[in-house]
Length: 156
Image 1 (cartoon, rainbow, N blue to C red):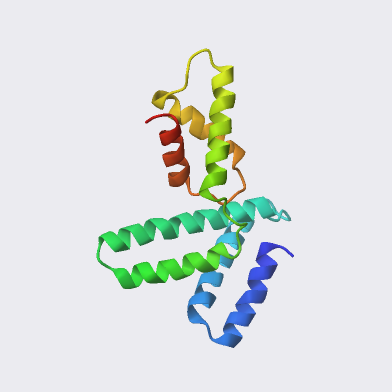
Image 2 (cartoon, rainbow, N blue to C red):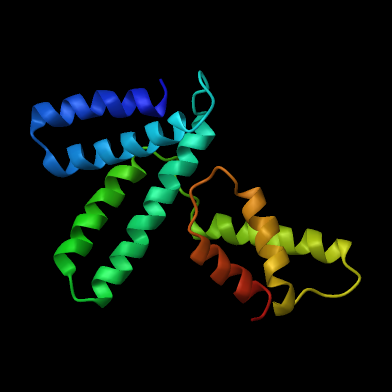
């Protein structure tokens, strides 16, 4: 079952349960997926990896909104965004924990350090980030967490 099919089923269930926040979030997710599908050539559907990428961008938008609403003193809107985040996360693969991310970052730094004639440090953070994010493609990770881990491992 594709992500879009599952969302359609869950929209029906949310309507029956009269769960407004879930219903509006599922509709927003469906719209984002359908919009991307319509922008493609006729007959091409989204792959699961592409659907995950779109849902991850929706999740990132919610994170940013929560931060902005909290700074602006609009806690009720931040709470609404947090509820939407939880619903979107149900449709994404489980996120890696910080220990697993740390291991991937360390392994990437070791690989890049072995290939480099000089030790890696804070100036090479962009290169390391690019390599780490390439390894984590298709997984649910927060770029800010990865960035903090890379910075700490490089001694920045």
